[in-house]
Length: 127
Image (cartoon, rainbow, N blue to C red; front, side, top):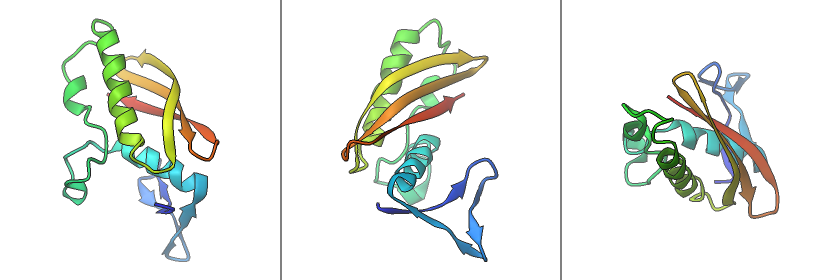
């Protein structure tokens, strides 16, 4: 889990230099792993079968009103995201959660606490 292949989420493609995939390590690899995990719906893609990789929130968010059930959503999202991300051996925990609704989208931000004492701010959007 120390090296990841760089991916440009804005473009939707792997980052290439001279036709070869760029690899990232250290903090950049952890950040990339976290972003991929948050964007992956658990139990949908065969490549991750049996690995509990990703976030199983798709069915949870469909058809519900965030404001009406805010407390339930906040606690369930915290639980699911924490469970998914702390599977990475370098991630110790998550803190400083913020939730806000932007139209039909739920925007979540939190700090990712690493075992080496470092941390970074991460965001996610759920529709």
